[in-house]
Length: 86
Image 1 (spheres, rainbow, N blue to C red):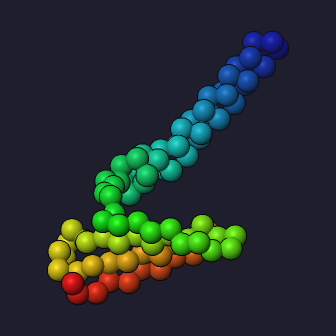
Image 2 (image 1 turned 90 degrees about the horizontal axis):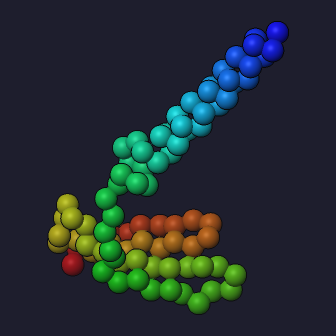
């Protein structure tokens, strides 16, 4: 009986580790995830003084269209992107 309980506990632990690793892979190792996506630095970063919000503006030139300038606004709740010709 103890042998059966030991095998059952080992199976449950193994299944838990398997599903934890699968979730980790889905979150961090798959294509487009944080660890595999290349990053780049913005041309300029501005921080706005706002009440209770962490608002920032990022200016950058897209690699796919060097004749464009893009501005990304981000705060605690949402963000927006606007691109225009240089």
